[in-house]
Every structure is written in C-alpha cells, then in structure tokens.
Image 1: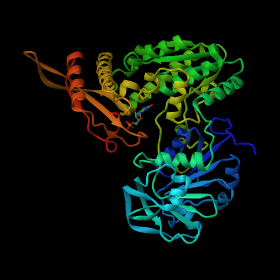
Image 2 (image 1 turned 90 degrees about the vertical axis):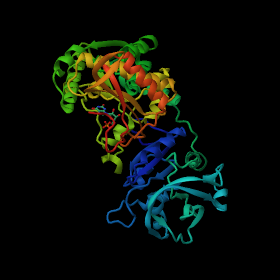
Image 3 (image 1 turned 30 degrees about the vertical axis):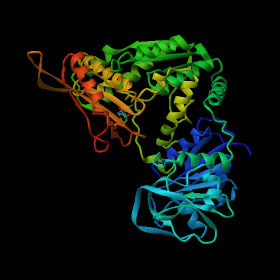
Image 4 (image 1 turned 120 degrees about the vertical axis):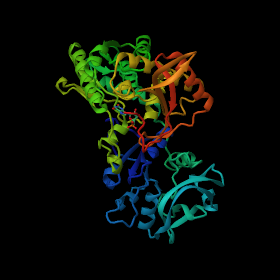
Length: 526
Ligand code: XMP
C-alpha cells in the first residue's frame, strides 16, 4: 500500500501514528518516537481505520487525555483500528478506552492520582518485550482519575503500583499494550526504554529516520520543487531559520538569497555571528538590511508592549518586502515553520491539542509578494531541527541558542525603547548568557536573559552616590513554554552575574533575580 504524504509532503516507509486524545504530553510521545529514529505523526483521535491505514503505520500510540471514558462526549476510537493488525500502545486514557472496549471495567478512583509511584514489573511483564531490559522496580509518573479495575479474561497484567494493580497490561489475542502511567515524561525513569521497546522490539522499526537521511531526502525534494528558480529566506539568528537556510543552501546553493533584517533589537553580535557562519560555510547570497534607525524612529516614545510588537512586526514586513523585491525573479520563500506550529495552528495534524496554544509568531508573510512557500522543517520538532542543524555542520552555539522573541530586546527593555537603553540591555544580556554558559548550565535552562527596568534606585559606588537603572535576571526551565519554572541557579553564578553587570554596564547599579514561575507570570516581562 502506498504511504500517505506526511506534514512536509514527503513519504516515509515506517510511520508511527500518535492518536491525540487531548493530553498535554501528546507531543512528547511523538518526540520520543523521533528520538528512536522513527518517523511519527500526531493525528486526531477521530481518525478512521481506513484513514490510518493510508499511512501504512507500523504502530499506533493512543495518548492520554483529560476526559473520563464515561463523560458525555468523551473522545472515542474507531474500533476497526484494532483490526489493522499493527501493535497499539494505549497510554492512560488510551489504555482505559481500550480496556473498556474489550470488556474491562474502568472505575473512577476516589481521588485523582498525581505524582510519582513505584512500579513493579509482574512475572508476565518480565517475559514481555515491552519491559525488556527494565528494572523490576522503578519510578513511574501517574496522572489519572480513572483506572481499569476488573480486566476480565482478555488481558494479562504486566506491572502494578501500590494503588494501581493494573498499571500495565497486554491483550491476549490482539497486539495491544496499555500503561496507566506516562512513559513519555522524564519522571518515569525508565519510560524512554519502555517506548523504545514498543517502537523497536514490538513495532519492529528499522530506525532509519535519521538526521542524515532527512537531510538527503529533503535536499532531493527541494531541488525537485525549486528547479532553477530563485529562493529567498529570512535569516534571524534563531535555530529554525538558520537550519532552513543551511538546508536550502545545500540543495540549491547560490539560487538562495538570505535576508537578515537588523532591527536594532537583536542580541549582542547576533547578526554578525550568523552572517559569519553563513558566509564562511555555505554557498549563499546574504543581504544584511541595516534598519536600526528606521525601527527606532518608529518606536520612539512608544511604551505599550502590544503597540511595540505591532510596529516591529509591520516594519519587519516592510523592510523584508523591500529587500525581497530587489531580488529579481525570486519565486520561493523558505520559512522555518516547524511541526508544533503546524499542530498548534490547527494544521493538517491538528487534533485535540490543536486549540491549546495561541502561538506568537505573528508578522507573517507580506501577501502581495506572492511567493510559493518552501517549508522543509514542517515535520520536525525542535529536537529534530537541532539534530538536522548539527548534521548540516552548523555550530553548536547556534544550534542550541535559546529562543528569542520576534520583537527582540524591545519587549525586554521596559517602557519606551531608546538606542542607549538597548545597548545597555545588550551588554547585560550578554553577561547573563556568558556566565550561564561558563557554569555549564546553558542547556539545562530553556531561556535565560536580562530585562532592563526604567526604574532607578539609589546606590553607592566608591564614595559616590548613584541613581541608576535596574536589571532583572530571568532564567526559566520549560518543556513547551506554556508553563515554566524559574531556574534554581547557584548563588555563586548569580553573584558573578550581578557583580559583572554593575561593574561592566554603565547606567546599572542594581541587579535582581526574577523568581516567578509561569503561570502566573509570563516568561517575558512585556
Ligand atoms: P511568554 O512571555 O508568553 O513567552 O511566557 C512564551 C515564549 O514565547 C516567546 N515570545 C514571543 N515570541 N514574538 C515571538 O516570536 C513575540 O511577540 C513573543 N512574546 C513572547 C517568549 O520568548 C517565550 O519563548
């Protein structure tokens, strides 16, 4: 049977489908599959057996979800999916739904179980490939209100916890495995192993979905699509745009022109560094549009955060369009759209999770330019993008760079933005990042930066009184940027950051550390 085309319009030989029942962890399940070099797509839980069969999947994973199987309107599943003959792993809700369908009793527990539990693998579990190589006892992460109680004749218990006797099960006659806990979260200490067992030992993935293969097939596809036409690409210094530019450049060389818009709101040396990487390593035409003054003039006196965003978004489109029009006959616009953008904007794979996040990357395309879009990263998660970036030879610092908002330092320079304030913030920000890198904590933190407050306070330096601004240090850890925890940076790292900022950045005499999580605070200050 022919394979369906995936999110990037390509075909894959071996696909795992994750049916999304609305769990906040659905994307993690798909990412874990990718980490096992296996292509995986998230599809709505309402997918029919014949639609699923068109992907020719080697396995299905049914995600968790917030509903109870007894709720009115609770998501159901096409029972014919179990006749496809491919292995199915049900996680939490996905397990309960299947157990109920095959005669088990699912009951509401008196209290929701949330947190870590010790899981013990049963004798039958030890014989099962699902638990191969795993410890007899380990920690699993629970988050459920219901659980399967009476299993009936169809199922065998593979593992249990003190409060959940049927924590992992398998069906006797269909290739179904169910786990009540969440193997996709890191709190389940051997969860990666369990998922890997399912994908490799049970679904028999040949693990050929690698960054190298992705690069090779994408290059071929881009060449086929682009032919002899010219392509333009906005290059910002962020990971996604850099990887797109690198990939397209490898495919069509100097048919590609990259446009960097310097809006004056970038991090220290950001444009210079990315331009250097591309000039030295890739065959591309690179245009740096120095538009700092234009942005600053339009932003003068504007202190409302949303207004700042609007001005920056619109001006970016104006400058980019002007530069693009100078590139004769450019037909394609390459963009760094990645898989979570596709899912979150309710795109092809938008399932239950589609409405969770409103994503920020506004600004978009200048419509009158009428380019054909080239989005070669549409099927990739951030982790995949990084692996592809490394495969293409991009430097680690660029590939692992923390995300940076489109409006840049403007939303970290509170109140009206001026060149002086931005320069001051740029220096302070570089110190924060420098020290976190030096302490070996950059990859442990998801976003670390400085914010400049237009708040002056009294200080003393030498014998003189000072009356200067305040810098906030912000560092968070997060998986999805929807919620975030402030980083417990060691005191000595904070001390070095503070001392360097007040000594090296003129106009700042006080440094504070932001200890707010999201929610209720947001990651950015504006
Ligand atoms: P918040 O502040 O909403 O940020 O907790 C969540 C993530 O989104 C980024 N962010 C933006 N990205 N344009 C962007 O491209 C924006 O206007 C914008 N505002 C916030 C923020 O840096 C964090 O990664």
